[in-house]
Length: 409
View 1 (cartoon, rainbow, N blue to C red):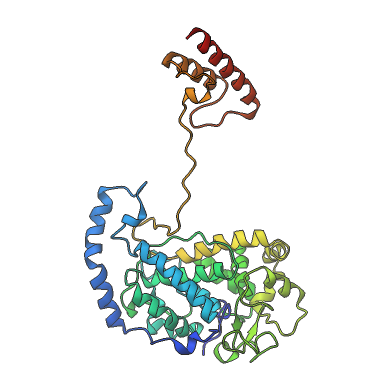
View 2: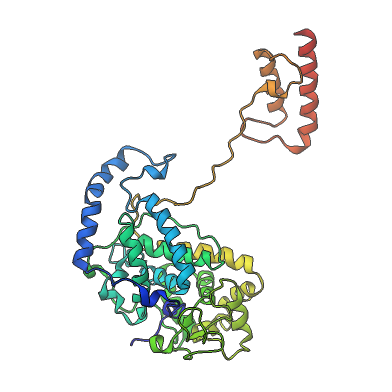
């Protein structure tokens, strides 16, 4: 087995009963290709013309019939993933699945899918058998029934949806995700082995930078993403790292065994940074790529901050995770779309002068114009709140004008 990777050791075990009860393996490449072509060929043929003719600005994404993934099915798949997490405790391996599909991205390669990234290629044996992906077949087994149920969701979107949902359901931050990723169609489109980082290289800091800089990520994002080690365990039989079991893993939940980075290894918080910094518990795992976060001067600045400020860690992690999940992806529509109900921006209230009158009669148009002129003269407008220090003045002016209107008509 090849040397373990940071992405692999993040959550290297599948916990819970789901590993043994998954229905079946993924279909063959031929079957998958046929299914994709049947379900989406007509849509893809017409989508280019459709999007050239009309803008998506202001449209409801529920009308995106020709997107790579169906909005409503994505929402339903997310609910199924939440139920899966409740019964199998598979948060770590789902996070790892999304990371490994996206983490092959090379910013120096322009063409898709040669550049790698979040394109669903990890479903093929050609990539699944890479040494860094040991054990991820269990994640695929768990998600395949959901994929079968929602044919309108691409594998690339499903992997990233499962990863983000697992973080959120473990108590982590809400990830600002977008969807519409297009799948590769054949194993020949998988990236070559060796793009994922090792866990124990001779020079951990240089190695991490070589790999993550190739993806277009910086030092802050490297450290923030490392914080996801708060979830999961490393199993020596899969990765070559960790103990067979510790007092924190011998009783599960899920399948027992392995060595975790944190005591509560199914809870997403900043305890990873605290535990790595203190290194007082021999039952907790510390890899060379973990220890370097407090040894390298640039990494240490962020790691120290995350150890004492969970809010900052959550913010930076959510941004880094979202960026990672988009690496190398080709979106349809090109700008992608959200499956969350985006809160509408507060629209400025339409100016109705009569609303500010204490009289019983409707103000004349001329009086409305006078009031509007006074309002705008003091700095107010229909789309700009009136400065606070003018509030009392405008109330007085409106009151005086209202009285005059009542008296003189």
